[in-house]
Each structure stands twice: as C-alpha cells, then as structure tokens.
Length: 283
Ligand SMILES: Nc1ncnc2c1ncn2[C@@H]1O[C@H](COP(=O)(O)OP(=O)(O)OP(=O)(O)O)[C@@H](O)[C@H]1O
Image (tube, rainbow, N blue to C red; front, side, top):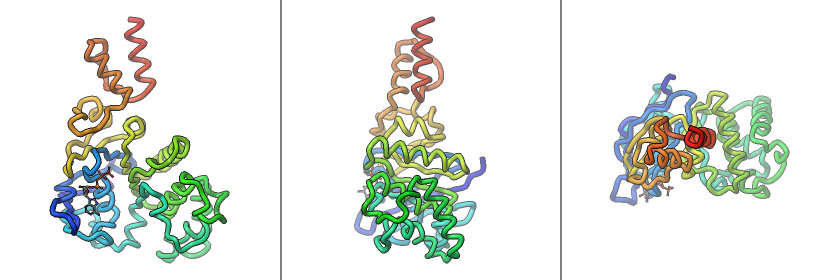
C-alpha cells in the first residue's frame, strides 16, 4: 500500500507551556489503513491530531517543528479551507465541533461546503448522500442542539465527511457515547474505511482497537514508543510500561502461553480466543 500521510520530526510546545507536548514524532500512514493511536492520558494523542489537521499551528499557538505531508504535499503551505478537503477531524465532544451559526442539521452539513464555494446543486446532493450514510437523514430539519449525544456525533462526523477528505482523524469520538451510540459510530468508520478512506483513530478502549486497527501507534510522554501491526503491538509489547491495558482476549492468550498451553499468534478477538481454548480442552 502507498503512503498517504508522512509525518517527519513533528514536535510541538504550547505557548503557555515550558515542556514540549510531543517530541520528534515520525510515522507514515498507508492509504486505506486504520491506524490507531494509543497512550496514557497526556501522552500527546490530541496534540498530534490537532497538528495533523492544521489546528496547530493555524488556531493553537506554540512552537512547531517538523513536517506533515499528505500525498507528498507539505500541509504547512495549505490554508484551512484546502486542508479540510484532504484531512478531517472529529472531536471527542461533538458539541465543540458545531458551528453554532446554523439552526438545522442540513445547514450544519452545508456550512463547510459553503466556505469552499461548492455550488448549490452539488451541495444538496452531497448532503443527502452523507446524511443517509450517517443515519441522520431523518433529522435534517431539526436543530442539532435538540439531538442526542450519539446523533450529534454523527452530525459532527457528517460535517467532516461531507468535505470528502482522504484521511479522517477521530479523537476519542465515542468516549462520551453509550455503547449503542459508540457501536453505530464504529460501524460507520468501518464502512468509510471500506470505501477507501484512511482512518487515524485515537481510542482508550483496547478491545475496540484490537478489533478495528490494522496498525497501532503507541505514544509515551510525548514520544513515539512503537508503531507496528496490531498483533505485534498487543502480543509482544510490554504494554504496562505505557499504562495501556492489554485487550482481554489477548490477555487470555498470554496467560495460556505462560502456562505452556498456547504458542500460536497473539489473540485479538473472541473467535481466536475460543479456538485457542478449544484446542487446550480437546487436545
Ligand atoms: N492547550 C494546552 N496548553 C498547554 N498544554 C497543553 C494543552 N493541551 C495539552 N497540553 C499538554 O500537552 C501534553 C499532551 O496533551 P494531549 O492532550 O495531547 O494528550 P492526550 O494523550 O491526548 O491526553 P488525553 O488522553 O488525556 O486526552 C499534556 O502534558 C497536556 O497537559
């Protein structure tokens, strides 16, 4: 797979801080992959997200070093209006993403398109398509502030996706939702990925990360500790060093391994755990 995103030597120090929040981060994301970013609180996950999408340095002041390239183009030379058509961000709190200048979901979805001068006919088509996809087509004429948290998160996701970016960055976008709302968002993310979108996902729920990620990047105190396939990260890395929980299913495999009952690949999901347990019981 070709690389779509290349980050080299990225560092950032907030203007009100003495310490760098992230230091010398370099990695690539391949086109069409799901790359999950994990790490303890304060390890720099949100800072990286904000730097990838241009909020750093356009809206957040500080000292920034290094480069972010999308399809080999340095994003430092791009205006926010250009960046949002290449890389979109969805925040943890969807209410922070609303424009608060519109009174309906439809206007909210149109907001970014209007800013980049998309003609009205095309706008209507794009909004209809995305509203269906985000399962918000029934709410188009409602005020976003009347919706549930899960519905507003789907509006926030829709307002990023409607710009048709190649890369979507999701910063703990399900952490404030109930399990059903969270599953709905995860289903939509998987659909978008199957359509070829590259996904960069920050999440604290390691079961979900193990289920969805192609690769995992581990941050520790502002530095990149590891980046590898999901199996290699959860199966081989000493996660406790980074204050990250190992997914339960992987833990079952590691316990079987410690007792010399299993020596296969790291276990990532329920099916693999059941297969390993059956082998132990029936062999
Ligand atoms: N606006 C800000 N001004 C000053 N320092 C900040 C700001 N935002 C974050 N930081 C600091 O930068 C470091 C990295 O924070 P960041 O929010 O990127 O970590 P995180 O891994 O996303 O944390 P969490 O999981 O709690 O969201 C922390 O030390 C944090 O205190």
